[in-house]
Image (tube, rainbow, N blue to C red; front, side):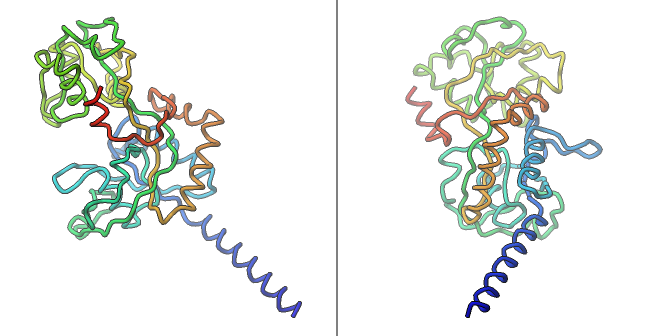
Amino acid sequence: MRGRRAAWSIAAVLSTMASVAVAADDPLKICLDEDRPPFSMHHRGKPDAGFDVLLAQAMAERLGRKLTIQWFESKLDEDSSPQLEANALLSDRRCSLVGGYALTQDSLVAPGMKTARLPDFAGATRDDRRRRVALGVLAPSQPYVYSPMTVVLGPKASGRKIGDIGDLAGLRLVIESGSLGDAILMTFDKGRLIDNITHLVPGRDDLLGALQRGDHDATLIDLGRFDAHRAAHPDTAITASGYYYPIGANRGYVGLASDGVLIDAVNKALTGLAAEGKIAEFGRQAGLTYLPPREPAILGDVWMKIIQR
């Protein structure tokens, strides 16, 4: 009997060791948007770059696994959304994690649709572009960066002190229709700023270019978007006001709820990297104005928060 127990014990140990070895050999697959500077960039003839690329490399090293980045292209249409795209990529096992995911309650709820199309991704076939994927349930990691909205000033308003949205009164404002910034500016103080707002069509009009030319005085955009513009145009005449709208979202990784062991390992790695100051350093290297995560970790109903302000 004792010999049999010893045999079973040795077998269990060998099985565990084999599982660990397999996990170590299995690459850590992370999906990243190929064109979202300064977070992630993947362009032909240029090295991969961005904050999320540096973090993914450090994450894989911390977990003792090789890194494979699955690049995808986010194109919104009536049948898609960032939530559905991420879910489809994860559910199709194109990756185990999606990086740079905005952690909001509505982006983490169980999808109302049972299936969704995959976004275009590196290596996709014609069949991949046609088929639909059965969706799973998403689970977030702890956040690793805070992504707020910020007021950006045109050359004629440079130096204007902005401590609140109300300080934009009297300025010529420009915003993209249907954006979060649009909702904030249009509803502020019962519409006090409406008469000074010009709307542009996203994807067609050049918002920051119009601001650069001096056609307008100020806008409200995601901080990362301004960082990307400043990196691409180091001589730009538009400037950061230093004001951050008080309602912002953290970003982190998202995976499937069924991969809870991986999410736990990722959280431990993120805690260690943050404590060592490495995540903030990745932000500086990528040209990102890095802000550490803030409470609440997962943002609630942002639209109600804006309307109630």
